[in-house]
Length: 359
Ligand code: PMP
Image (cartoon, rainbow, N blue to C red; front, side, top):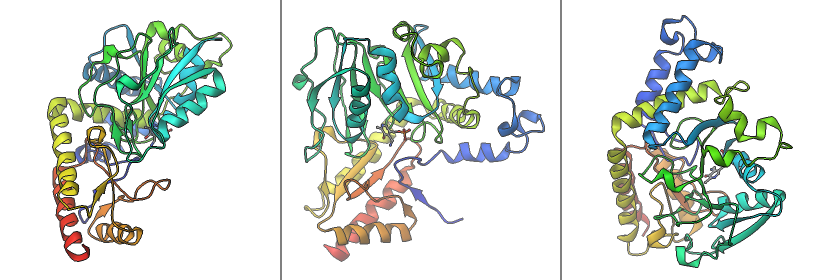
């Protein structure tokens, strides 16, 4: 197999040793003679996987017993609706920071449920950026404040989160477990699994248990956080294989060390940003410098033709998934936790070569 570096934004690169282990036990999990894909979600083999995943997330996020870790299908997009369905009471207002395309989708869903106050809006700004904390015009007595910790399309990332009186809710889909943060600062965190956490198929939700109690009795069972908390995410059949893969990834993160991974992430991103900044304007970063994401690095070339050629030549060299999101164009290099340093080095050297030929 030839070496491929996977820059996809999600589903994204997974640690090679996790894939290797999944392959090795695909036909015979835990000497049971069956694949984990075939086990009952009520059996002891799967249960051990499920409980280890939850325990590992609690450890990685340093969570107290006030918080629950749950798995909800429907991806992060369903959380856009579930958050207000559960936390936004009649007559209350929820504050949303609109920092880009993903935040704006969260706003759209919340508006279907209740009152929304957009407390700052940088969605349409170019260069892209995250609003500054001083810009937020928070509502007194808001039900919660919603932020998107990393805008996957815009290539921007909150560097420090706002301190809010109302519970802080964060969509961390594209930077979950990529850097240290204080989980106690948040009332609820959610993330689609398919970037830093595992394959697609579930959202990881971390919720302060008292907040889940706000839900109205009228909300359907499967859309209430309390159902997942009370039934340990086993009310119905969960996405067993995804959770198994997520568990293997948590083991990998624990083994790598969160601090090491974080340092490596910063270093990887810095190498690419340096390549952009040292190109004399041939490559142009699309985000304001102090909002640059360490996960999704977005930039432009002098023309769309050159961008097309760049993506094609990179792909021929085994560097896949560099095309920017279809809504904005340009180039996007997603370098999540599992993306290797060698891939970054190969990429920056390709950037220099490409500029030499075309600059
Ligand atoms: N939020 C962010 C920040 C995302 O990047 C994405 C997916 N790229 C989503 C939400 C939507 O996730 P899902 O596809 O799991 O619904």
